[in-house]
Length: 516
Image (cartoon, rainbow, N blue to C red; front, top):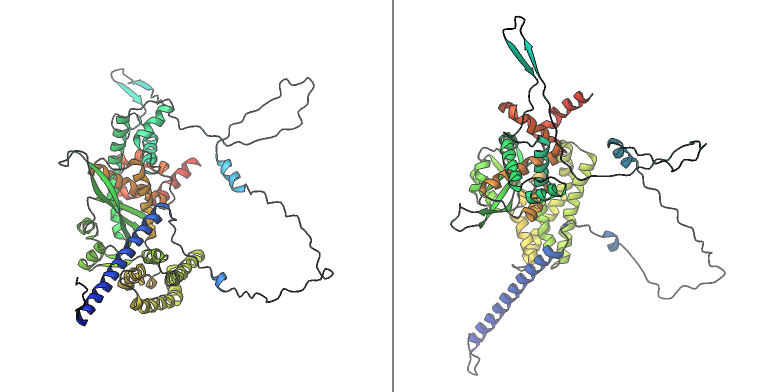
């Protein structure tokens, strides 16, 4: 900094002015960054999570002209105003509810007038259906196995005849498969921690010790753990998967120098949207080595967000092609909307047109070949126009503006963002793995952290199976009850038949046949 004096020369004055201008730009840039951070924090706390942009083109096309002078009005020429009573709202169609009620067990109760006068003749009846529920209850199923003695003809030997005893899924465990399945579903689908389940059992009159429920859960998850290997094999056997990761806090006890230290671990998700499979793998970190082990034998396309780790993995393994997510690219313009409305709305309108093409293809249930052709005819012109606009606009923006950040993000990944138009099997975004990760985020708010690295691995395996059930519209309670019953005696080389996507075709048909 120089001092302003009377004998200051021109060169020093220019340097001083340049310094002031630079300081002003730095302060402006810092202020803009703080404003963006504040807006993001408020949006995350109070704002809407939806990123869909619907342009209101109707307002832009209105051509309203206000007359200079009010029009003259004569009473004789005025039309009579008539008021029409609005029609009564249509009654709700209960056909769907009726179909649902027919499947439920019915218990009949007859209420007779008290007293019934002598000589009264019954002329009819009215039926009132009420949907009732009772809290989950436990009951004891007692299996009685009679024993028979069969002496030989010469009475020298005796044979004892009895039916086989019911096989228990866990050694010396009184819990039947239905109870074990319900505990797992409550924990991993409904995000109900085990201590809350113990309290609920207690309210219903059954006192199950908390430690007992914890032991049952751990042993049942270990019983199901062999299914994780064929699930991983099927996922990696696909040529197209979505990859993402989410944070999971892990409580470290004896494993760390400090007692009860929280560690930031990660659940890495791998989603096969074509075959409807999800695989989660727990890793203690978020680095490149944490996903290399899973993808080392994979060959095909991975679709990811903009995390640089995936780019490094694809660069090392030539068999992997990495493409990016259109939803993450659109999100950058959504974040820039409050600061540069005109440019952001233009870009979001183009993204909306691209997604409208995808919605129409899904609505018409087009095969993959036709989807690719529709994208070539309709999506590519929109993408070319958007790309040209980005290259032109990036020349006139401040380096620190949110719009510059959005344009730079898109242009750096442009070839990987538009790759999906070449194949109808590919999705434009990574939303399918985002939907699979969403239950984990809900669970974190309930159980807060995993108790150990081993517990985090169990969590990853159970979320893999439960999310696969959800993608295939399988009732997880029915699936778990059946699999827990069968898995002990099932051949190891056929365990893939017990996975939710195969169980639907293999076992439900058998179940229906047996019922008939």
